[in-house]
View 1: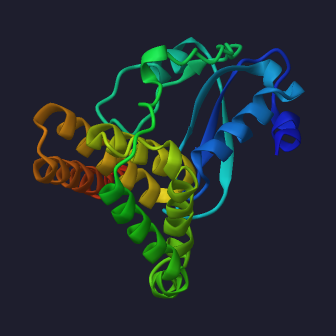
View 2: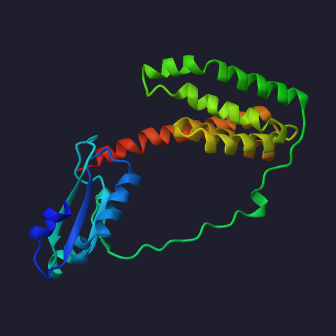
Length: 244
């Protein structure tokens, strides 16, 4: 694509490059595409970039497009002029990417020490073993409406909790909920892992503040439900609605 565009470019001219997602390419892959394009010899004439973003789409088409416009003072000013539609991405001057070091984890974020509680351990073990036992059935049900991996995803989280059972703060309800949330958000993946992580993390915070398990679980459920509703009503739909 860059070779075909380069053949049509004028020598010594400055260009704005629009990197367009046709609808279904994941953001990470679009970033890799942008990096590859802007790291090529083709980029020496690119002064501004717009995107990567879903600016002209077929809603769910798996592909991307590259478009050029030759810049002059009037066009550059017009492209950078503020506009009302928030779906339009303003141009960015081409620049090097600054790579930042990974921040150190504060000592205060370490897990609570392990502790024992026979009743809590029995409940945790029973629930995890049950989820593992119905892995195939959950996958079968999910395959009718999704990608058929719910059982495997949930079982992965359950196995991880069982594997670290001896290191969990079983006697500290707030800390246990927080650890479960952190674990599921790390090992499960997918939307279910994120939502369950939000549920247990919010419940752990509420338990620490109120000391009431019923209220804590309700707080976690409300937070998870609110997040799920936001992702459906505000996120994907508004992106589609605002696409030109």
